[in-house]
Image (cartoon, rainbow, N blue to C red; front, side, top):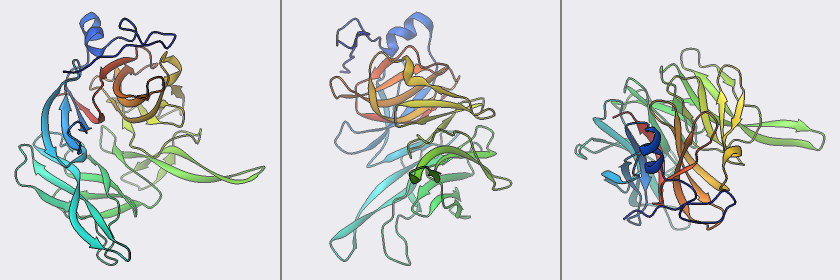
Length: 313
């Protein structure tokens, strides 16, 4: 049974404080669809989907699966799976993390990208796949940078060596990612991270955010392609793609949260779901907030899940 927590605006945990997503939905309606997420309730990662109103797990797609996402038509699932085969190293073993694809019912499983560099026999990190809107390609993160590959396993290519996890824009013409850059200050050179966008047609990249406080985690586009939500050192921001104007969503939260992960826009663009740590009781929950300004912070579920996408069906 899912436990719902509530926090009073002054930060005292009480039953009548922070509303649940189900309560708010009953009062004012809610974004439809389902949220895909990496769940950890069984002790090992699993690709699950959640009801965006109740927070209940309504389906488990795969076990031993992280960063899982469904194809646009929902017929195929992609996720990262740890291989149990030892890759011998000078000291002990390493274990590959492969990009795996299966049919929606779990059948026809095959490795699309092996988490091993054949030339060195090392097991690099491969993670955070994202489907193109037409379902023909996937972009993912590796030690080589931001790569993509066709869904049939051909056309593997490094798009940029300075990018992390990428997310396709709704029109499929661009990919957003977090990039680390160095800059000179009075005290010397420092580094920071911002949101950048790659134009697929020209392969040109341009900077969107400029605060140098982004975390190297996946970002998400609003359904209309006008905003990008991303994790920062202080919480959660949304940046307007055309103007670079930033909204600090955490400024509206009465409950202090940290270690934010997995922000995803709802299909109608009105809400954002994410996982975070409550700084009062040190428990991790999944929350939803209004996408426009971060207000109406609500607990979706106190299960240990990290959202990967919010689908319309």
